[in-house]
Amino acid sequence: MYPSSRCAIIRRVVSDVVSVYEVSLRDGLQNEKGFVPTESKRALLDALVAAGLRRLELTSFVSPKWIPQLADAEQLARASLPAPEGVSLSALVPNGTGLERAIATGLPEIAVFLSASETHSKKNINKSIERAFEVIEELVPPARATGLRVRGYVSTVWGCPYEGEVEPAKAVAIAARLLAIGCYEISLGDTIGVGNPRQTRELVKRVADAMPLERVALHLHDTRGTALANILAGLDLGVRTFDASVGGMGGCPYAPGAAGNVATEDLVFLLHGMGFDTGVDLEALIEAGQVAERIVGHPLPGKVHKAGPFKPRAMG
Image (cartoon, rainbow, N blue to C red):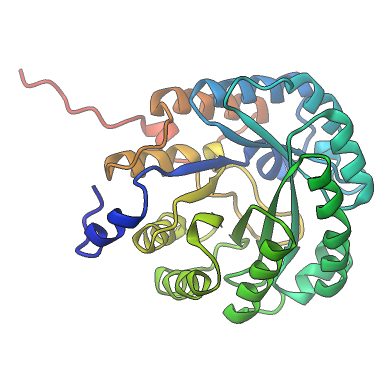
């Protein structure tokens, strides 16, 4: 179990079950140079589900003009449904057209997104934060009226590639507004991987004052090797949902220099070693990381899919 004097108190009110939200099929593949065929994406999806992952972001209904790597959104969604029992598939939706496309496929969940930085928002979606909110307010009620669950993303929470530091109060206010609009969970993103544990603790404490941590996820890119350290800080304060990408695949097209999310297998290795339950089979997840490397055609930065799980050698 988590070795902290504070943890005994946390355990009485927070579960030792951690939810891993897999984003490699969308957040990972969108940053690849080439288009990965639909059948290869399905093979990766099958491997991830076989490993025990139950929440997976499948694609984005963004215009192929902007992200051609995800041009097969409809084909992939239809080929992946119905999902196995207990598995929830989601897709990112940027606007009304994207919502219509998502509804037509039968996906049960969508995600909406905005940035905590004005400059990043304009670079990413060509809209101010306030205008982005107006779009989201037009999307969430009709989505929920059709029975869709809606997740919300806030990017550049720890820092912006254009503006530098982002005021935590601003990010928390955005997250609270997304929750009020009707998002069931808010994922806070360190899009460029600049966060440190002290910053993460301060941020999570502020967020906890504004909303239940059961409604919060952390989405941490590992650009500077601090993602797992920030996850530990979040765990210590009671966060129990983390986004991850198998193999550490990914980045952000509109955040120069950003690396992928924390590798799912690295996260699961850490959590299992500390006594947390994820419902994921680590060895099968390592195999999924190897599938990911094969379909993208180059090595991925995750560590555990290369090193393997820890198995003490037999004494001779």
